[in-house]
Image (cartoon, rainbow, N blue to C red):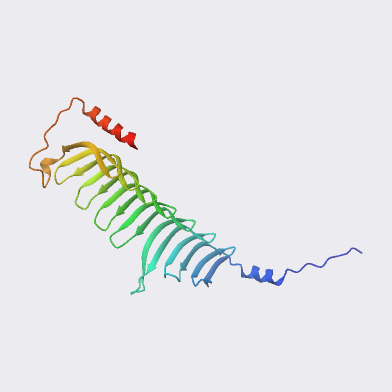
Length: 236
């Protein structure tokens, strides 16, 4: 007669652990740190669509999750201290619990950024509206203007050109529409180093200069500018 072994019983703690594993849609779960989550789970991790309320600051995230982290599209809101209503702060894409992809972040009622993000920082293309009325549109890198971009000032003047670490750097143009003038040249760390100032749209400018800029003739304008630019490049 062949010998038969009795099936081995799993320890009680393993059975209880398996029963506690959360998968699928669940009602509100209160976490050990006081946060509460309502939504979908997979293998005991937030996965799918869900809403989490954070006890520490009263913030609310409503959107997509992946293996316990905010990932996909979601909205992050903060609770107002007086009205207790939630005010949207960020709406857009997430990756590994950080803003990543395209999204809009509201710094205040009048200041906000819409564009690309990488690891919680503005990186890529984006447009920033500042509280003082200025608007920047262009490339970003690690929360700073970097690459090619346009800064439109509240007074109507604007700069179009190159940026580096948040400062004008490289070739660019600065327009003065109210005066009907244009400066074109090269900047280094936010300071104009060499260039030319010419009249541009002076006839239709609302507040033109008293006299037009006199024409100065050089034998070779391009050569002079090239020499100045080469000097700047040699110092970098």
